[in-house]
Image 1 (cartoon, one colour):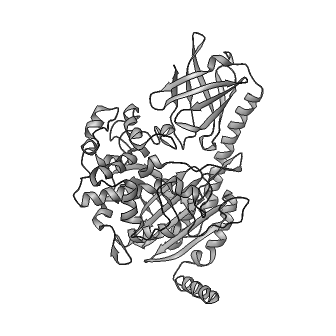
Image 2 (tube, rainbow, N blue to C red):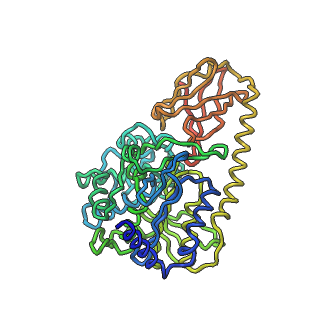
Image 3 (cartoon, rainbow, N blue to C red):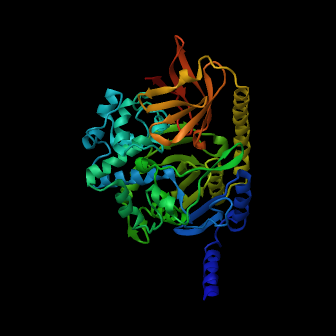
Length: 502
């Protein structure tokens, strides 16, 4: 019986592959295995949907280093910002049902909502939240928002303390907390939580049986990838990011089997297995350009990139590509579809230090567009590796300075105390046996070891590798530490934050 089942499964894969490009039929496995080694990726999973059928659905590598458990089509990954398309589609459904309007003022549904800019507070709409044009710089305020211990409402309320870098609606700035705010409009309209709305509108009808929105689900699951990053070119295990409070922006856990169903629905105008799941009119709302993101490099087939509602929209060799990426601590992932080709692609990986996931997506698109082969993974790796060497050299230079133990301007004890920033809140710097450590009130698991670099500069090595190794500096006035400038990795938050001593 087992042999017969194996034969049937093998036959279905072969039958579904006759019309597939040579790269998919003959080269995909070798390519993935080789490039995973190049990027030092423990595990990945890939799905390809073409002409209404799943033609590739496979896991590669292992879920956890040092163990033999393999990744399969049901293995969970945190898909992070790929969650945004689910949120935006939900709002579009409610617009289609005339239960709200994308042009509604946010304050109509969330009276407590307020931004630092009075004009924006008054005029910002639901659509503004969903297309990244409220004035925040990309990732602005995520030093606080990401993986913190505040509630969804507390994070939204705190938006009034963020001084926007840009003027309202002037340009694109990727904003996680804006998507959180949009998601919290769903219970205001429906009396159903964002989490349950997704469960009953997508996960159940699309047979996404492994997909959840809570940290505890992936943390306790027996078929989930562990998250990793690279430090000094070596894999480092990370804790799962608990972003339940950013749910509508980032908290979905899923696998390629489930996400293939999501893309089948997208490509079949909102239907799955012949049943209407989402009104096509709602899907169309999410796929219309609202915000200009950037010009692209025509050398690599694209001229521009815009943002719809929960989706990036770009041209690629004459076709409209609809896609989104997701990055969490230890995971980078992508979902992508091209309606003109009836093609959908999912790539999930369990390190956050690779661009292979996007290179493979492009490689698969090239194959279906019958474009000449070029190894996008190798091309991108060379550029990324060169940048990584520069970054590592900079960190090592700072380490060398700190290793010489240069004298600081003040006594160690003079830097200690509580410091406060209007966006983040409070941090505390403590002296333990002559060594300074910074602790973060809204991130109980995060700390930073401070090593003197001379004058009032310190090398800060964070306890969670996601945040990086950064130089921070104290502002000293009249012989006293007045404030400290905190920095983290750009992909967490690009801003410098000044904390004033209390």
